[in-house]
Length: 281
Image 1 (spheres, helix red, strand yellow):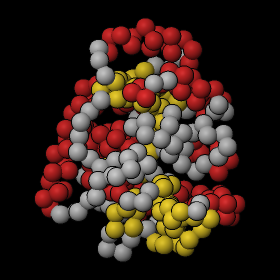
Image 2 (spheres, rainbow, N blue to C red; image 1 turned 90 degrees about the vertical axis):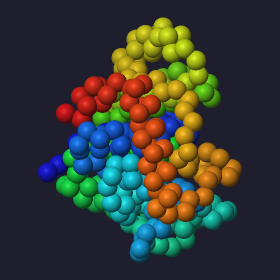
Image 3 (cartoon, helix red, strand yellow; image 1 turned 30 degrees about the horizontal axis):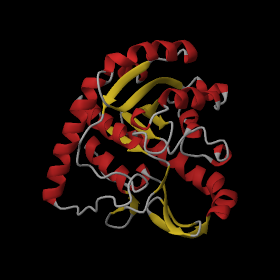
Image 4 (cartoon, helix red, strand yellow; image 1 turned 180 degrees about the vertical axis):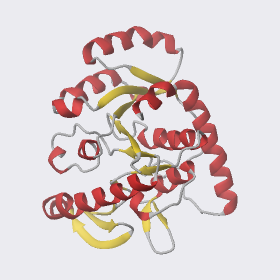
């Protein structure tokens, strides 16, 4: 069996990639699919510590949303920042050692990092119906594109359609979408199938004329506009100075499950799931 894939990338950090992947994992699990999340490389100070492994907390929560096991290969490369441009590197849940960013880029990411990420994804593709991939930051960081194993390189590897999500609450969303596409190689532009506008406040009808202009400029549609949602699911530490600590008790997991259902129900109402399912065919 080879799983279908869908990748969520963003115009920036904090655009809503993690949240959207979490919601889609639950929605598609509710549809009866065997779903798993995957993020090849994540940088986070907050992790999930299993019996004998450690991965990003975000992917653990996404696995809970997908109702699948929390296993190391859903986040094969984890970087835990130590300060002064150094991080502790985890490979498939095991500590690989501490490394300066310079050495990480020159000696690790395009060899061990890329190889382990592809191997992990291959394993997930064999045992699931759907793999929802999450990108990191933006795919258009041209200073880092050569070393980027979390965005378009992974999408190209598994021939995954890509949805680009943007945070409209920050402003500049339409420029960010157009600019992101413009900075991508043509082969990567072709992988992008549509956009999701995230964290919108107000009457969505006011945006419709902008969507028509965006479609003319990019030839790609907006497939969802998600309102600014209040929910109690821990954010990545890059988004807040004091992200919520988690204690993985049965009581907390029950509460988390309800929050995921709440998130998924709102996303489902505000995104074109017909288009999503079409991408998965």
